[in-house]
Length: 332
Image (cartoon, rainbow, N blue to C red; front, top):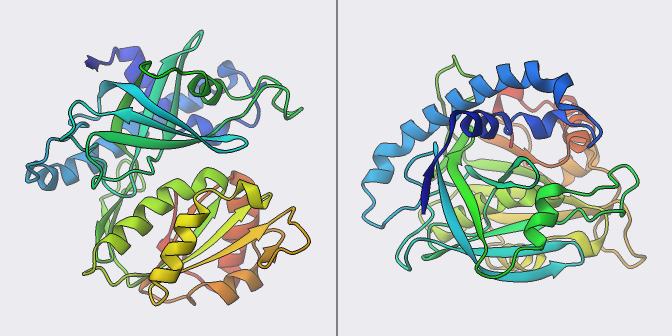
């Protein structure tokens, strides 16, 4: 089922690309943010559409039927499976229009999902499935339950809504969206601002930093590189979490590092580890980056996705300190 967005829904979905970075807590009010969000939404829509148009020609060459044909259209997909990944994380598998369909989402891009939960609620997710997967799309969601964090007593609207979905229930998807596209073999397109041209990078190495569920957009790029033997891009990943049980998709990451040890490495750090923890403890710091990442160079790009404080307080200042070029960094 395909639904055209109303003007309000389209505006709201675009604005949601800005909103998650602005809200400090659920107590923040829409009124305080509406002017800023309105301005940001205009830029976000333009950026998303220009990135989308830049890859449309390549997508049209693909004879496999694509689900996401228009980023301004909502596609309603039914829930096929639910899986408990950890104590607070779930995998949701949604059916595509036919067993032959793929989602049609380039690596580096994300989708918006939306539902009416008293009001229209929209969130961005990076699927963990890829366009090698036919007939379904998988998203990994951390569920923020009520009364588990005193700062957020109501929990997460969308994550709890998803957790309560039953098999056969539907969810609206929209995309592709986002400012980065990984084209393969070290070729990356980035659209930073509305009036700026698309920037093309060719890199040989990628330093990847992820925190919590921020692993999902990073993982899609890792998979794409390792699934294509002709792609010789090398990757380092530092993955931060609170506890060992919070590490998402660890088996896949560890197996990838073993099978592709000459191309991909992964290092973990925990803020609350067990006594026998074999990796780093604490926040990401300069020493950790130096020991487990490629050094600064003109053919190395940094890709980061995680909580704002991790990026702004732990990562960016240390990359500055170590001499990494700020123009060769991207935050999802």
